[in-house]
Amino acid sequence: MLRSIQSLKNFTMMATDGEIGKVKDFYFDDQTWTLRYLVVETGNWLFGRKVLISTTALHAPDWDSHSFPVNLTKEQIKHSPDIDTEKPVSRQQEASLHSHYLWPVEGGLGFMTTGMVGGVVPPEVGFDDQIAQEMHKEDTAQAKENHLRSFKHLRGYQLRNADDEIGEVEDFLIDENNWTLPYVVVDTGNWYAGKMILIPSRHIDRIEWESTSIISLQSVESLKNSPEFDYTKPLNEEYLRSFDRGNMY
Image (cartoon, rainbow, N blue to C red; front, side):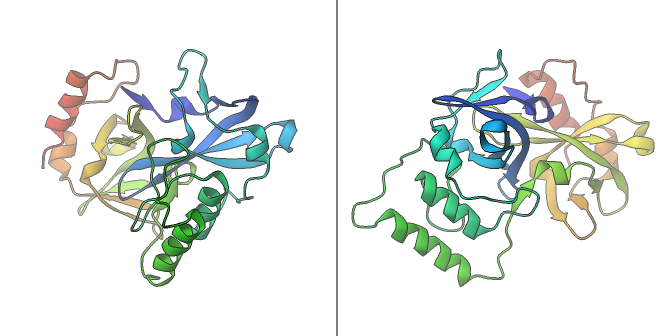
């Protein structure tokens, strides 16, 4: 099922031994369009500090009570690396998080976004060695860009194509089964009578951080053929297929 990422703000994050705090933001990978971390604002027990919790640590959400249970203790979270969530998260900071929580890593460029905490590390390669190998790969590939992005900072970015400015990013739709972000919700403003439309994330070419723009591969004609998005309608498969048909290019 798909859900608005905006609707997940202020969900309660629950550790195995009590409440951690409220979800305030989300970090996602702009290449895979997958949610990676939730930013949680802790309460008085941790002086309101904001912490990053990986989707790796999540159990099945309790949608009725608006809560995310995680398989972490408050003590683990208390001693986690202190990361400034108002700034871009570096690979080194990610490595520190994964090392602290023993979250699994995968070879190559990124960290795993699914699975359970405590993934098995081959006995011949220690966990610290595996983290060091990942960081070494990053150090020797300095030209590679960090693609971890904050939803809070991306909201309000201009959506553009080769010819025109289409509107502003309003929201994402997130697939609760695998934490992917298959659609971007765009407020078209005066360009298209103020309608909300959905843009499949697979049709996004790139994000230009200097110009605060998202570049779409779609034509103006295909975008104008897109149905109007309505938050009040159930996000079922047939409804979403209508957007995919309208967004052919």
